[in-house]
Amino acid sequence: MKFKKNILCIGAGYVGGPTMAMIAYKCPQYKVTVVDINNERIDQWNSDDLPVYEPGLDEIVKEARGRNLFFTPDIERGIKEAEIIFVSVNTPVKEFGAGAGMAADLQYWEKTARQIRDVSDSYKIIVEKSTLPVKTAQAMERILTSDSSGVRFDILSNPEFLAEGTAIKDLEYPDRVLIGSRYTQSGLKARDELMEIYANWVPDERIITSNIWSSELSKLVANAFLAQRISSINSFTALCEKSGADITEVARAVGTDSRLGPKFLNASVGFGGSCFKKDILNLVYLCKHYGLEEIADYWESVIRINDYQMGRFVLTMLGAMFNTLAGKRLCLFGFAFKANTGDTRESPAIHISKRLMEEKVELVITDPKAMNNAMKDLDGIEGNVSYVEDPYEASANCDAIAVVTEWGLYADLDFKRIYESMVKPAFIFDGRNILDHEGLFEIGFNVFPVGKPPLTHFK
Ligand code: UDX
Ligand code: UDX
Image 1 (spheres, rainbow, N blue to C red):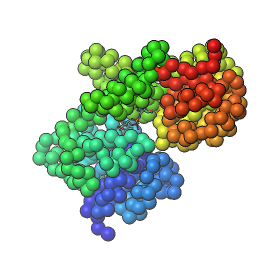
Image 2: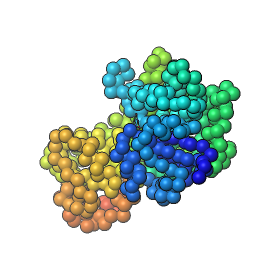
Image 3: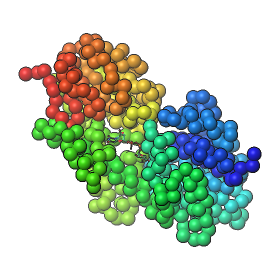
Image 4: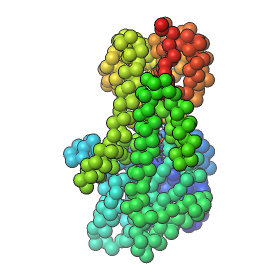
């Protein structure tokens, strides 16, 4: 079959894989090839056991794979054949040198740009899919046009707003698709080509355009606002616990204001995930670079509150359990950074586990999807930790349970049975407010929600 165009994606991760699967699924007239330096990942994408868990992903991959969706390790050939190249390699926080701990590490990006330049022998549209600091597209342009081959490139910024666990829904029904381009004739033509792809399933009014730098910045700003909202609601949890207010009631009352809206107001142990912290640190670095210290400090406080919230959760456990956790068995319900994903990047569970192990807790970890990642995250850390898939078995003989991830299955467990198998007094710390606190209290638990006064049997 002759395809209309060849699309390539470099980077078969959480973003590249599902995004390309959706494009291939919705646009059978385009050939979509996904490459990655990690051959094992490519093999997984070609197997029945995909490397990314997302509800609905298996179905669309099955439909498109082999038809117009291909996963291959041959990066050079992929680049040569492609007319449109999405770059979706990871951009971790830099761990060395200037900007260490804050700036984005762009080495993969730059390497990819050079590879594209060296291999290409025809015009290509390059699409930034990775979240990048403002002005990366410009650096990319400079690299791509830095040799004398005369091959032309146009660069577009097309940030991905999908959230893990709902990636397929977010890709299929996006709030918006944002495409940033240069306002040159060629830049606008490239933009139109990308718009044409999305127009196969996204309504026109949801495809918005801007200049490249606005597009790059918008992604960082969107994540900063979302994270700020969580830190804002979390900042009131301690006050609720002390004053007798209930954070869920407060969130409901506040969220009914149509200017504020009800979403993203769930108090928690803190936010995690690969984006929020990284993107804010990136913004902070950018502001500092431009000498905007006050703005940097304002956004950095979103992370400070998040760190405080994770630490506070551990201190609540310590305080509730008579100021010593040493030798006590504590079961973490959930390790993923949120429900419906096996991803544990920047998960609050990592921070909380490490702190608990410093307190010499015997830790038992259970999670329906993230056990392998949990083992990797805690590998080499001194302490007593075990991994048990079944939550009943995991919590048996424990002094306490701490809910860290909001998996729906935890709300449906038989807590009477769990209570009977635990050491008394038994404690539950619900870091996500997903359990029936009154019911647990009646069973006999001492219950510590976030942002609500505790329910205890102590006089
Ligand atoms: C995404 C976005 O692309 C990133 O900008 C965002 O900030 C975090 O989320 P994600 O897809 O989640 O990244 O990252 P990951 O799952 O680590 O996937 C990146 C893939 O790129 C990996 O499979 C890695 O092997 C691949 N890669 C990396 C390359 O193919 N080439 C490289 O040079 C570097
Ligand atoms: C986020 C953005 O939502 C998405 O648009 C962007 O493309 C990537 O970053 P993601 O990190 O996958 O997506 O998950 P998200 O649902 O935003 O949750 C992030 C963290 O915030 C999780 O740890 C989650 O549990 C926490 N959270 C979210 C809360 O604590 N309370 C809330 O009300 C919502």
